[in-house]
Image 1: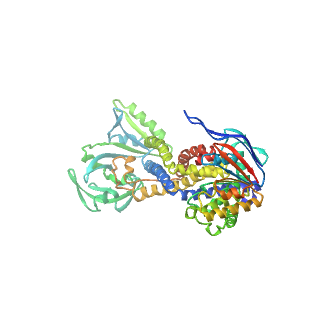
Image 2: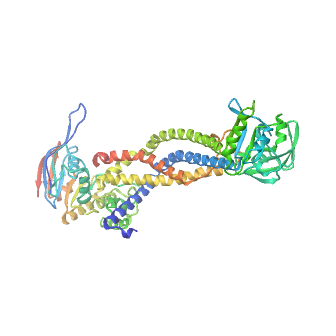
Image 3: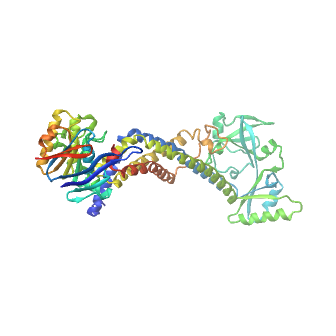
Length: 225
Length: 397
């Protein structure tokens, strides 16, 4: 379902050694799995996640998503892929301020030709499934970290993607919100979605189907359950 | 109409509609930026609309003046300039075939009420001598020693009908106050009898020009005949003949010159305004770039982001142009073009004493909208495009 070979991301700076954020990574994650990529700070987990989610272009290597090689896809094709098949939950939520939560959640649908009322209905349904129906008209800056995180999940799921990526989803929320989040992700796994999470949280490691450990940009250990 | 669209057409229509609504919402979200850009646009558009309206107003009044005036203005030529013409020429010109009427006119400048005024001396007893004016109070002068003053001049100097005024060497009585379709005239114009003005300026027996009225279609023939007169008489001096079309050409040239100077200054200001708008558009640029990154990450195509920005600028321009027109209208009609009209009407001062002419036409409004759109698009499309083509993660970083 998700595969990469020789995947590398280097940051080249003048007169300095290049930083190999991701270095020659080979990885395979089957469909419907909950995979956790973990490692110490600066190990390259977030960069690898962003590369797999098409949010960055790799310096070298190949990526397959849903059995299609996407390495040489145009920016337009990659964007279409994100719109149709990929959801991403950011560590800092990345919700748009000063606009309602429902509109934030509906943003991925809005340029697809759907009417605003239909987009709103779907956003409300998605927010409802995250327990945020009564917060739909609130702007994100008025909500707690946990509520913002759930809104970010609602946005990532509104177009019903096959692949869901989450970057350190519990790092900015309290223990209770963290537990709720774990429940939600497990529910999604049962629904057949493929989940890739970059996290240090032991709670995730306990429920993961696969754990990929990274160090200095390289995969150093893999564990399958 | 929408129901007639094909399914893909409906989809596209809905998409554009939704994007336009998000754009409107974005103007509200980034309200500080919107206000700053709007202020910049007003600073550019209001003078433009006010100037165009004033130039149109002046042009329209000049046309009224020319239409209401004589067909040919005849004076003597002295070193290539207008010179006084002896009244003896009236008889000769009146005999020319096609001439309906010949009237002498004396146009002079003199200080009345401590203000430099235009004094016009015309033969009494006919309304033709007073073109494009309407009496507000009193009557037209019928005798020597009677004068007619403009409404603005009367108001400024608290003049009333019946009041006696001391003018150099004699006294005159105000018999009427007029307003004019050519409002500039009412500011500093005084009508008197031709004889009074000749005496006042010690030019008895001479007029500054003769007003020749011709029968319809005879203007060209009369001009030709007048040229013949000046060359046929031994020792005769050259005449200067100015027909209606020539006068119209003069003012058109003056209008174009004023318009040209304004256009040059405006173009300069316009060029300077683009970087200003760029700076204004750059307010919250980091936040904006981050948002573009989020949109791209959630599946928005580059052209969709660009369309959103286009809609934002379209809305801003649609708000800016009509509101600038309202401000310009208020400035010219409410504040009478205070501080501004002097650039277009000489010797006016900071505050005009008469209604400043203005005419608002639809075309400048359309131009103002196009200008606003061009300025804002130049200021934002390129930066947005450069942001949108970068990988989302790089932009959001």
